[in-house]
Length: 194
Image 1 (cartoon, rainbow, N blue to C red):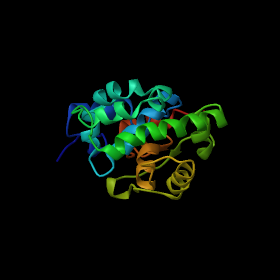
Image 2 (tube, rainbow, N blue to C red; image 1 turned 45 degrees about the vertical axis):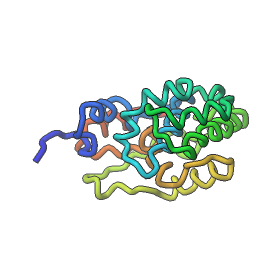
Image 3 (cartoon, rainbow, N blue to C red; image 1 turned 90 degrees about the vertical axis):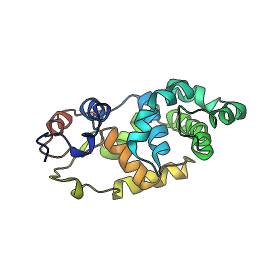
Image 4 (cartoon, rainbow, N blue to C red; image 1 turned 180 degrees about the vertical axis):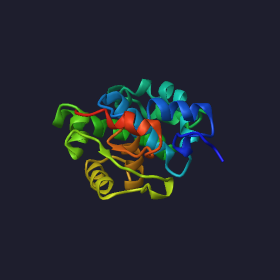
């Protein structure tokens, strides 16, 4: 039995622990980071987060360091070439969804000034802090993720089902699902305001 106070899902590798300790659950308002995780969370569909995390650098190279304008402008030939790129998950639908989502992302930015303003309005600019004691208590989707998922689909986004969006909300800090005994629970709770 481990005595590590961290959330137990992150204990498998040092890379996982670093991600947990420095990124997961930290309120994020940077549009480029928000776009990055839309791509990465969509890529995870049907796979483990560890698989995606190990390919994160490959995704950054393949998708112009997650610049939505540059991804939106990628050609069919560029996207097709990525199906041979071992640095990413070579699923054609997921690869093509990155350009599709980049174009939808830019439209949201035009409408709202930035994507962060659109997203954080769902929680009035402040993270939802849960107080779970074990992983079995943490949901895989909620009414909030249903609502955001439905709106993103209406706006034309792909790979944004409710389970994917709940994982996205956790990662980007709109929902603090660090377990209450984890030192990051309090640290992420103290990040307030939009």
